[in-house]
Length: 60
Image (cartoon, rainbow, N blue to C red; front, side, top):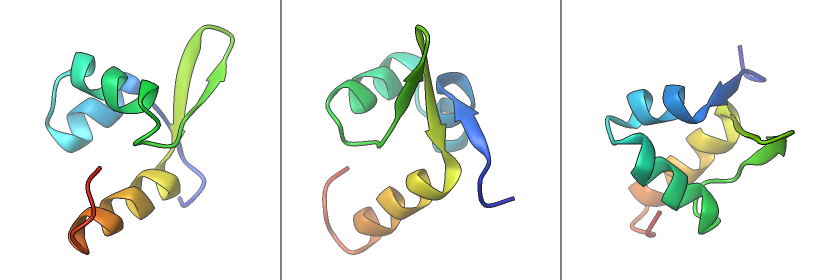
């Protein structure tokens, strides 16, 4: 499902990093995200595009 919306916890598990590191990446704008109320959400397609940039040698 290309329009899947992920939580910080799900993204952290997907990337195999801590939730704290995930929050830092989101707050720095390195992972595109949006807030619903007080909770961050990340579209999986946006995350995958960010990972493609990393594969091309760009920093996350």
